[in-house]
Image 1 (cartoon, rainbow, N blue to C red):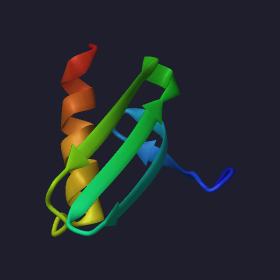
Image 2 (cartoon, helix red, strand yellow):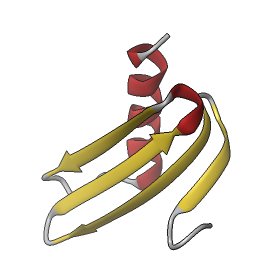
Image 3 (cartoon, rainbow, N blue to C red):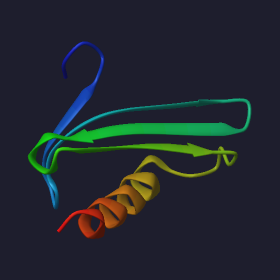
Length: 67
């Protein structure tokens, strides 16, 4: 963890630095993947999405975004 951000080292896209949150029916997720020189911001009007569901969707987007 660095400055309140989580660091995941074992993702399919390499190291991911991320932060997520939600309030009043909304969810957000921001991730940076330095190895790919990419980042993604996910905004949703569904608060029922689980953290691992969002991470899986972000993994899929990043894996095809820049090959």
